[in-house]
Image 1 (cartoon, rainbow, N blue to C red):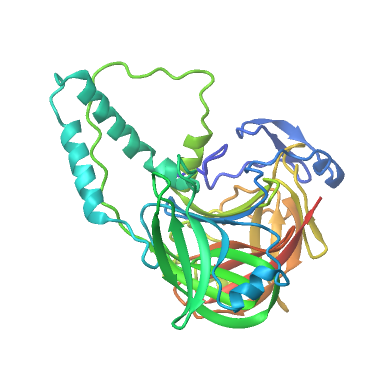
Image 2 (cartoon, rainbow, N blue to C red):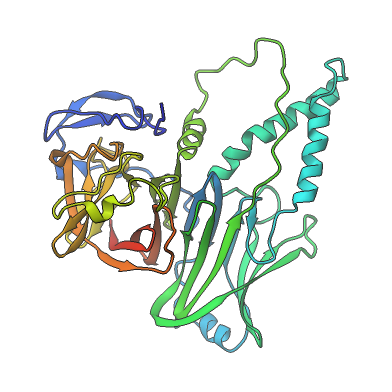
Amino acid sequence: MPTNGDSHPAGHGRRSLPGVRPALLAGGFALGLTALTAGQAGAQTPPPSGEADGRVHVSLVLEGQALSVAFPPDLAANEPAYAELLAGAPVRLGVFEGHRALRLGTLAPDLAALAAERAEAAARAAAPAREEPAAQARAAEDEAAAEDETADAAEPPAPAGPPSPELWIARDAEGWRLEIRTPGADGGDGTVHVVPLNHAVTAPAPAFTASVHATGAETGRLALRWGRQAWSADFRFEELPPPPRRPRVSGRGTPRQASDDNRPTARNNMLNERNETALVLPDGARISMLYWKGMDVEDEDYPRLAETPGGAVVEMIRAPVLRLKSDVSLRFGGTDVPTGNLAPGFAGAYGVWLRKTGAGWRFVFNHEPDSWGTQHDPDFDAGETAVEYSRAADSFRPLGATLVPTGRDRGRLVVHWGPHEWAADFTVVR
């Protein structure tokens, strides 16, 4: 039975009396039932779950593989750097992280080297058990590395030793380009990967912003805006050679300790079923959206968009509802989406449903974030907001979502499925 990485199997949302919401621990175990008012929900501010490094972070996880960009929130269009960029000088935008399977411009995995590396690791792992302890230790390290690869992909990888690759933008006679500058391991000259950019002139953006959008199961688009300039580049995650098979080892294994942190395991289990878009604010407050993998336009649920009657929400029989989680209270138009809706002092967690109306569409925020796509209970609706509906050229996109920063403490939630896009702006309520 599929699970959602939280407290109960996907498709089996916890029920309680109308107007009463389950109080949950951080680990997701139900303690009891409590009625929380909107004032109580926002009374305690949860601690930030991201790193407070003064930068804005945007990330996307597709099939357990992550791409992340971090940039300062104050790269305004009236800063000298923007004028220097238009005059032809390269400008540093921020830092960049990507899974080893990422192909973006000239940045690409060395599949031959990786295959040779894994073949060597497999050969060591298959060595007789009577090998010297050092060889056995190497095999164990290879096994641990293969086992942790999915875990490493689930979050934008933290740099170990050398700084993260830097992201620069420049223009020459051939057009605009990104440069991903990777420092050398010994502090010397590193590698520069070049990413050609598509360019357009748009309505002005007051400050630099970046976002990462899914366009397929393992493909996406990096989008940048600054002033009246908009750039984009497509990327994909390549299929890597399989990791070496785990050798069978006799013995009792390693006993678990009471102090072991199960959160990485729970997160990996969750990302086996869902993709994630996330936005981390400069103070470390994290906002994220989870959505089910593989909801293609060929899926039996896709026609429900056209078949849903006015006033009803779009149901899905093969997926749970979209899941919003936020360390900070949000406001969509006149609709408040506070933290602490499940328990005071914890991040807000909501299911986000699409409702068709006579005039268009609306996002409905529901206090049951883990309901299956056929289990919408209007008694648990927290509020709803009108959305902007549009159609894009990407006709074959699976169901997905993107969190786009649009300014300090401001952003935009975009949901897409095939050519359909639904978007609503939000502000952070401090």
